[in-house]
Length: 417
Ligand code: C5P
Image 1: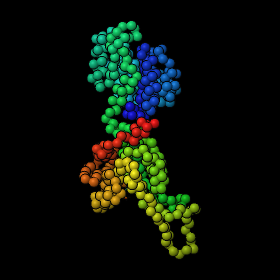
Image 2: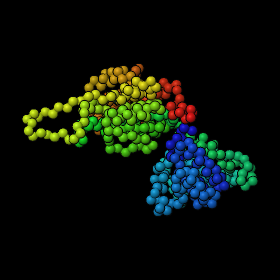
Image 3: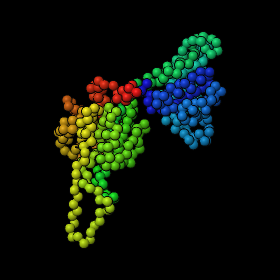
Image 4: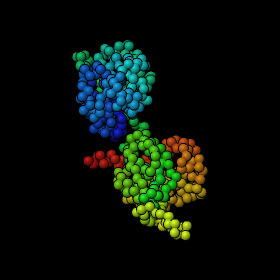
């Protein structure tokens, strides 16, 4: 059930007696740490109140397509984009007919048309309606479009008849929902990524920095979230939007980054160090702005620099160390310098990157890298940083899982509580 952790689940409720089970469904989803928004049709509100669903989901319930107040909060299109999955439970025969025919005449049907998230239906209806040829025809159309159907179950129905048409129980629906996310191979694992440059203060207005844009680290964070991981991104100063479902910690200097990493590292399974951490910082930060002295003839200003802690090496040296991946941005002898760092810093993998080529360097949108491990080397040819991030994540995940004999740290923590 870890797979539903932090997932954004939109529950649609249509007007059937099984609507009461939606309350328990939402309650369980929330217990599993899923985010839930509920959309109810007008008929659903006759069976269960929006207030109940609001209290259980922790969010306002959406009922109208043309409600200006609701649209000002989260519009129907925003809701459609927000959802990782839509589950309509119960889905009546009428609702299935509307979906089969592509109707968009209320909020829920419109959302189902607008979303690109997987759509799942939990049919619930009288057995005669379920077996009717029109419903059968609609079921086939819906199935051909790739809509998931969970159930129905067979048994005694609310109307007193017996047969197929009972909505599955909430926990059964949750089992099916979690299957939707089974391709997410990092589900339950915690990934920490550092990104961007660090700023090392000289005085209150000046600092030493570098050209890192953070693009690679942010793209990796997005790819890790898409693989189901619980991702913390510790970023130096960059002007980038935080990818959805990523926990971001902003830091300024290398020492801030070191502290943030070690504060979070205890439950980390994979640590990816993409940050361009300043190797040195001024030995002291002047308390006020350093002034040019017009009376001094010497044009030189001496700054003494001292070494910063090596964050990735310090993580790799931990007793309970995660799988550690470093980056080596080099301008020459790329592979040999990177291999040397792999061994010297005791990393599991290192990604070598030739930044002398400005088209794949710090601020560019593209990259080409070589992944180096103790016993292999794999080159990824030039493509967008987003694509590189996905390919990198696939390879490093495979290496991590191959070596992995222990359970995800996050799951372990949950089990011992
Ligand atoms: O030694 P160099 O800076 O080239 O090593 C690069 C790798 O080490 C990167 O993964 C970078 O994030 C990490 N690093 C670090 N702390 C430092 C310097 C580099 O974590 N002080």
